[in-house]
Length: 357
Image (cartoon, rainbow, N blue to C red; front, side):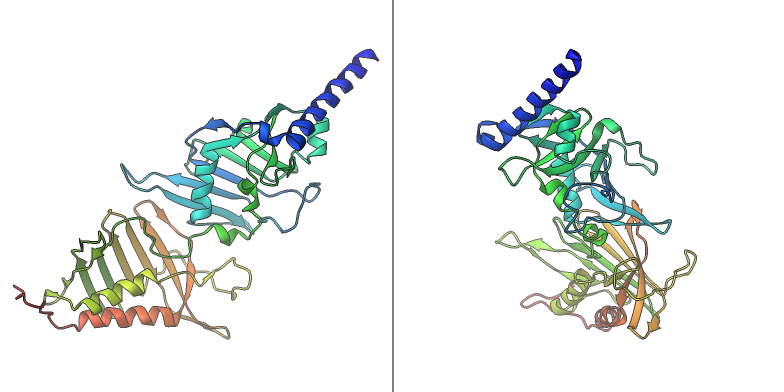
């Protein structure tokens, strides 16, 4: 009996200290790094229906796995997101939300490190029903996530509204709440909608084949006195010529503006048909950046419905990754074709005060 009383007393003291330090004296607790790790993958698991924490706004409903894939020395890594719905896996390039998560979780900052207890876990809704983030140093097709590196999120902690309680193995920590709050959004919020993304540099080469057209343009851009790249486009198919700046720049502008209109699993999307993996594309656009990053967009035959005219697109980040099919408006594709035809039909451009050889 005395032993039970002692255990209850210890648990009460632990809970009291947790409340005391985080509720009354959060400013006296210095922030520390819980770990510094180079994680290669993150798995998000949504909360279960019986979780006693705040369920609104809704969390993303599907489990998602994020991967960081290196692209070589001094290159920005590629980030991907994979999820499953109705037993179908879909994979896309991930956006800034995921990139930020890798940075935030690699150096995990906290204002509290305490041994946990059943009372603390019950009080802060921490447990197997909590939303969680699992971490791994692997990024292959099959990833083993260690239970020791799984973060279970609970209620906000203390008077600091920016902190949240997190259970890691047998400890409770208090990192920033945005680590999990960003997941109160649909899974599409973690996908990169732009087909061509930039970190540095410029588009070095554009190539379009299909629609009875084969056009290629090269860009020898140079920085001006303001350290900004100025394009210098040449057509390298047919008669090789220097392109008028507006013609080359228009093609580049259209390419940079290409973005996903709908994902097949997106709420509110038309009931798009399945695209066969063996179906040949109707047109292919290749984009090469000055940093060496390459994109390939394969455009497949038009699909019409009461909702409009749509064209399926499959994007590859060569040679690392191929996305699940996405959809754009037919009007968007035709704008691309118009820009390509202007390059195909362009006349030689004579630079002012300079004769083109």
